[in-house]
Amino acid sequence: MNELLASAKGKICELITDIDINLDFNSGDYVTWSLVLIGWCVAIAIAIWQVKKADTAKALEARRSTSRELLDKLRELEDTAIEFWTKSFTDQDVIYLDRFARDIKAITTLSTRVNALGGPEYPATNFKLLRQSVTKEPRNVQFMGKPLPYGDYRIQQIRETAKDIRGLYDQP
Image 1 (cartoon, rainbow, N blue to C red):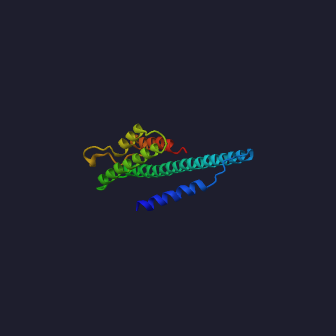
Image 2 (image 1 turned 90 degrees about the vertical axis):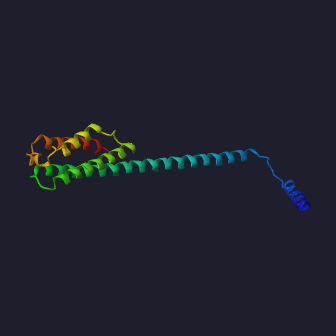
Image 3 (image 1 turned 30 degrees about the vertical axis):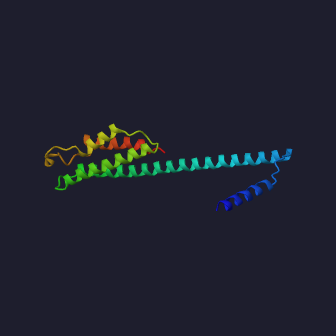
């Protein structure tokens, strides 16, 4: 076995020494290889630029689609909340208030996601005002003071706060 390995090693050494590598460059070879290397560098730079551009475009599209989703949910919440507060008391009012709280949580989650994607800063004060104007109710739901007139402070607060939040996320 050792003889076989020694023989194989000897043949490999013979082959390596028999290969005639010509490393003599003339002046034309330097120019050719320089152009090849420069071409590779340019190709790599273009590939890196395209990948970065694609990543930026994906992030921008993700932020825009999340912002659109947030705005759709906000418009739906605003319309439903104004309708809720301007209608007479029903047995379903507690269910609506719970739904409003869930919808606001979904909107704030989307806002956090937009911020993580490079969008505007999370507007904590605006979301606090929106939550208070939409969901704040007395302990006894039957004494909420419904229906409210359309010009009531609560209705105006819902509209103004939703408008302020929309202003932050309508921008590209």
